Image (cartoon, rainbow, N blue to C red; front, side, top):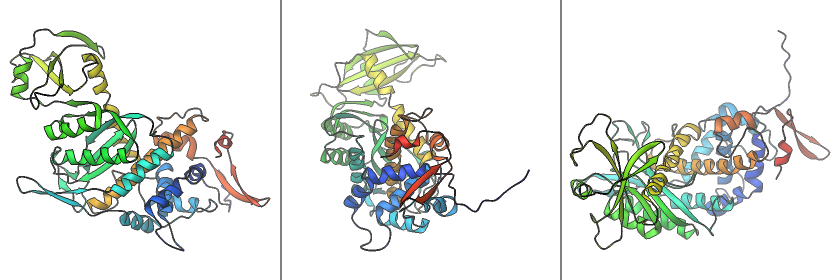
Length: 425
């Protein structure tokens, strides 16, 4: 095998030039600097440069900020007019966008750190509206969840899963992250969640985004949380916790109906919900199935497994309520995507508040990816709006190309027969 070395700058990631083109020409850079303000007055890197280059890292298949220096920087610098900061400059810029933690004290006199970064969360929502991913003329369905992000950072706390990490609360609309608050890993899921949800709903409302239905797991089952969710949503669906009072009501049910959900037969019923409220017209939807081991339920004394959903929706059938609630698994998948594709498993900082800024910015990167991959899917075979990042990198970003200056203009020469020219904005 003979080898010939060519002293020419050919990038294996030439597809990232199209990402940069859309980032700039679609007005994302201008929006970032308008909302966040100037980072420097004359020379240096603006916040738009920092966020754009972080976008370049992840959409080129990188998994940490250091990849700008180690692997991608020399290729990004070949793009005409592209300002490429060092990894240290990117990290400094993210730190500058962090906010001080808010400390809350529980009834047991235990203090917990929460990080509330309204400016970055607002920028994220504005960017979704700017790219047409959210429309102020529509109502949306809203999901909220808290998930452990495992890490061993300096201020990480021991979680209920017996590992160390953070316990962020994340709100999503469809496949888009719309709000994040980071919190100590040892904080109870219900602790101050009502306030978190209210801040999230209010920020969306301030930007003109209104909520039709809200959907949450049993970690949101408390009176103060339900009050907030009901106030800001037309309808809500929350998994109810088991309790002796609740199952006293369930044992009185005589008329169970059989329905098929995902090829499994369940018995379902509805009863008025009076545990927290007697004056409100809330509904408890109950589903049950025979236990595989015939073990008796400690509350009901029978061999059924029970699941319950609290809602104010009396128009839908039990099956419709259950099937809609079960779709919230799509929002939980977002944590897997953020951990594996957008850096949440490699937090760059030692402190919760700085990592919170990183999480919100990478959520913006993920949302921009949703926008861009939807455009690419209209042109490229084998790419669709739900394509995961690794597949996208192989099929779009990884193309050999070089920028050359000819006839008084820069031209991107690509070594491919794919229809990249159809993506010029």
